[in-house]
Image (cartoon, rainbow, N blue to C red):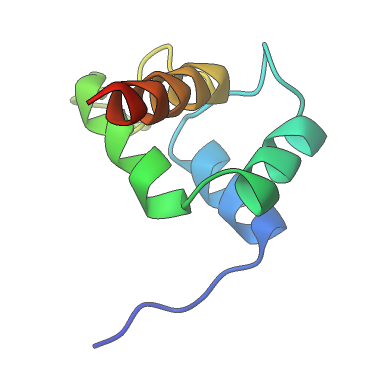
Length: 84
């Protein structure tokens, strides 16, 4: 089964549904970054470094994870790959 291709706004909605916030970077800035600077699934893979809520109505949502953290990790990874 293949995954459905989502628009940038749908990707941002998906991130918000997973508990990822946009406190330190606006949704518009995040959309620009996704559209012009990164591959979504690579950026999204960094979420595995963060904890999820284990029970209750918010079960499965990330704890204190902001999009800006994922963006910074992807930038660090990019520069590290250049150096190596």
